[in-house]
Length: 294
Image (cartoon, rainbow, N blue to C red; front, side):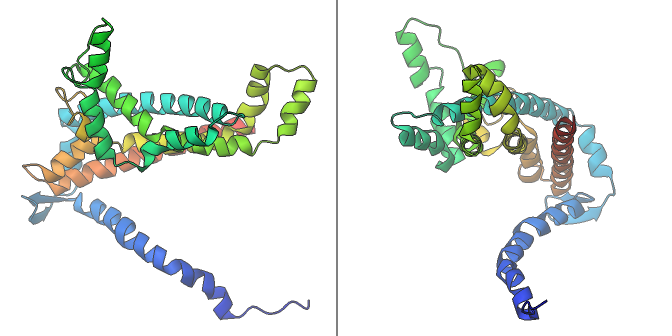
């Protein structure tokens, strides 16, 4: 072989370029995560004195009714949020993939919520959904329609939470799916059309199978985002009414930052939430891999 021998300096160069990002990732992500696992085995008195308690924090948190209530709310929220987000984002991506006048404008419009602060989004939607004086109920009342208590009825509050969550991330998921759609060879659709396949048949037999890897990415991202939802929801409902929209992240926040402060319980809750997200993600990948193997 006549190839030039690569020196150690050239071999190390890529890793040296990565080193700053790896250090930042390690300091601000890996270390806090590992430290949280460590703190979950300690009991803190007002967030100051730490005493080792073994698995007691996990036993206390798993016997807390509020934890299971938040877990049930989280399950409902995640299922509705993921299902609606994926379906609506797919519909928007298919629509934006066509030759549409003002397509760039619509793409920017759908993506705009992603650049807004989630707290601001929650506050704005909180004003829009107010029972009295809210824009939506004002319009409904003007049309002679019922004016529901969006944020005071427990069932409607969860509907509002899911709707706002979908609205925030819709553009991001649609953008990913749009990239997947544009990677599909258009000649496949043209050949199928020549064979007499209609639009629905082409979508079902060509688009959906070829878009499956991209859809899996969106599904995993939406699931993780659903489990981690907190900021916009906290500013929208504060977890109410009657705890109907209190999710696990808010439960952890309350244990860690509201009196009586217990970093141990909050850390134990964080570890449990991490395990749930990890298991759900692994199941999603496992099911997708099994489907690919069939």
